[in-house]
Image (cartoon, rainbow, N blue to C red):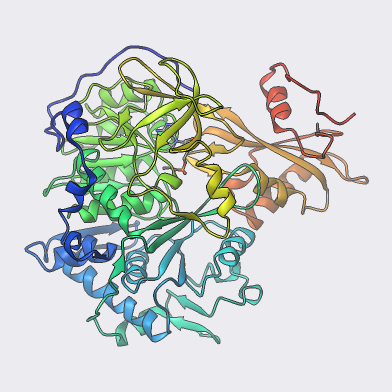
Length: 574
Ligand code: WTA
């Protein structure tokens, strides 16, 4: 939650692709963005063609599209090479009989192969489902089951976490590794790539055909499969230009993993649609390695997250002073509120303003942003991009005045808006309960200059280190542990991670609270679901507060945690 100050940081000397915000808003039409692509005339489209092949067939053929490093591998690929490799993978899929509309998942650590696979899936018209590499069995199973995926691209080390026997639709497991001993239904990625042709007639799609399925968390029920379509490229391309401010000579680095929407919309599509050189770093976060990455590739545009910035800040200013970051000209942030002190720190150490951007998995692309060339108010998410109208609505859907806190909503529609929640039309409808608006689930207010200020989530979704965690998914895992009778999960404010996960647990008879038991339960979630969803804190209680219908009242747990009044308890059981 950020408090309002009218401090302004004027733009630096960067020359933005959008010269004047008000003017751009006034004249904006999405059709003008579309006309930059030739599909504008044919109506047929393919994201991978526009991101890679279009450049490979131009003077950018031998331009570096991808610098990859992870501490062990260090590689560079041109647009021409990525075109060939993704063509090969497209052919591998076609030989397996995979094509338009099929769901093909990717579950592996970041590597160039991951990106070839993603593009190859898109080229044959299949729908890509990227999964975060740290997911454990339950998380993987829920997502593959819900989407009825037919194939998965994975690494041998992750194979044990894919419960193939419980997934009847999953026909093919494509393994990226060496010296493989293949079993039935498995394909050796490298071998198959070698024998596949690098020529491919890709599938031309309709604008509304499925592109990518990102699972994200809500407060109740299993994760939701958010479907995006090829038409999203209009927004990715446009925001890449005006928000990321990408130009021909830029070397761009987005630190997000493609398991999250930022790692695809802005780690793959936006930079490549704009023909930029894209830096991808594998491996774990280490401040010195990150600065070294910025220095080594001469990164000019850098998109990261508040948690990462706070960790870099925590690593001390002396560390950063040892690196030459003079090429850096534009820095952006997404995923959670960007603290004003982090913005000030950025000004000090990078001599750069950090530009906050707001959007969600469901929105597919940036919507409310700070732009180069516009004054930044630290603590504010900025203003809607041209072509997008945002407002604060009350609980009846009426537009509120400036400084009134309410539901942050976006006027429908924009090109990268989700088109479906997989298998769950009623969930989809909930977002559009006020006619003509998409309701985000965030609360915010608007100031008199049209800047938006994030205040919190309306629901119980936890945002830990920029990642959305659904409390229900964690609670469901917790109650599978033999010692746990009931569990309630909340986000607890944390200076580094924004929020951390705290679980309140009532034990079954015969179990006694102990530190060992806590550790055991944490490990149970880590190995069963995923590390980022495991509680950092556990508190044992004799009983949890519940409604008469038996729902655990997270609101009351949160009030306990924050020493706040518990509010209306009229629906509580006994
Ligand atoms: C939060 C990530 C404050 C918000 C692209 C949103 C933010 C949720 C910001 C979406 C920001 C994202 N300031 N909060 N600039 N950006 N959020 O789907 O609560 O992983 O609803 O998408 O993150 O998270 P998601």
